[in-house]
Image 1 (cartoon, rainbow over the protein chains, first blue to last red):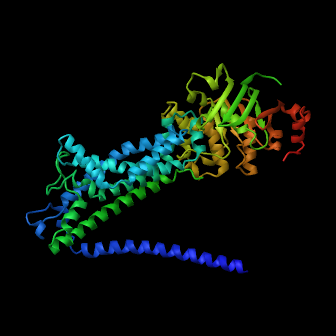
Image 2 (cartoon, chains in turn purple, blue):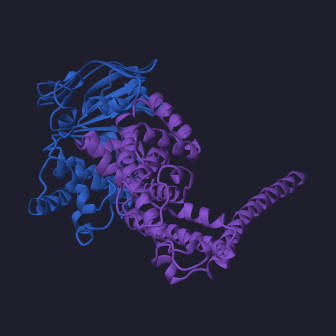
Image 3 (cartoon, helix red, strand yellow):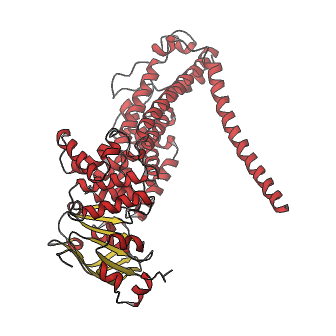
Length: 287
Length: 253
């Protein structure tokens, strides 16, 4: 009797902790979104998303941040695409071809985790050193390469975590039909994990589009629309940063509007990824 | 007992790290009959089955010695492409693992990877193999549904159809009915009896009753060794080893 009372108290205690922490997270999220919307929405205008900064933009006059929006999309898409091209084969190779060499794979995982943990400013500095070595200027291309480097560990490890959960029986089934390792990888493993892979890609895209430090030196900033890979390019995080550090109130408000746009882009990408992953989820073999 | 040996296993020793799993296993598996590998859990029967199509390659720290001849080729020491060899052996596992795609594509998969991709070629064949596995009537209107939407018994028959589609001459089955309900199990068992005129079937089971029902040839294993083997009738009615007698009487754990 006494024991059951204690167990009930324990249950109540841990449940309260869980509810409390969940509410804190939910509350923080709502607060962030609300503060962005509250301050950003009034400053948001059609002009803001369709025009490049004009003469007096940084004094609160006409113009918008279309260049940064387009620049960020170019940058994040380019980097995500490159990281996919590298990340998907690597993670499949780790889980299918190196299946028997768990020690090696675990070492690779450890190294990738270390790379994941390196702050993006370090990637930025690294990219910058390389650029100087090759005599390159800050440009969209340099930014894409740096951000690719920075999201590759994120991409590989998130896909890897999904691939680990593929049951061994599925692998055996595939081989017993006479599949090669690459057929097993791309026709079975990838299909089984397509929703997880989509999530991984989205996660990487979110990191790519939201990061300011890695693009600070490498991509530079400009008030023009990006037209060439070799030109400096504006990005949203830096647009927010520059506007936020302005002493002029109107410009500051626009920083919030820019943040709202960035948040909206990420939300949109999330929804698209969700839809894609649900559509392909149906073929997943459940265990 | 008539017929030739399809698979000739000779002095196979297998180690998982330090663990000696198969000890001097020697057996002849007769062609176009059902051979049942019988024994209590953990005696190495599944491992023996997986050595035959070299799925043991997927496990770390495995060392195999000996030879397994299928036709003229020694599977364990072959110079041929292992994927080619596996194509001659269909596999049914303990629980069905359909591929993550729709029903049609599950059966078409094996044909596609061997280079036959045209829809015109595939359609009648998919139907043929689904019929062979007794599944066609149940799925003919929903071929584009995910394979995972089938019941587990249907999934196992889908796996059978898929295995047959690559035109193997051997079917390896690793306790194929252990996850199924009695009715679905019976369907699979009856199917095996039907199929044995065309295929050499090797089935692992721990169920004595099942072995009695369908075996033509029995290999009885205990702790990694073959205790006794022989034609089913002889094996069940006139066992030679003490251990076998005890097992058949159900005096085993």
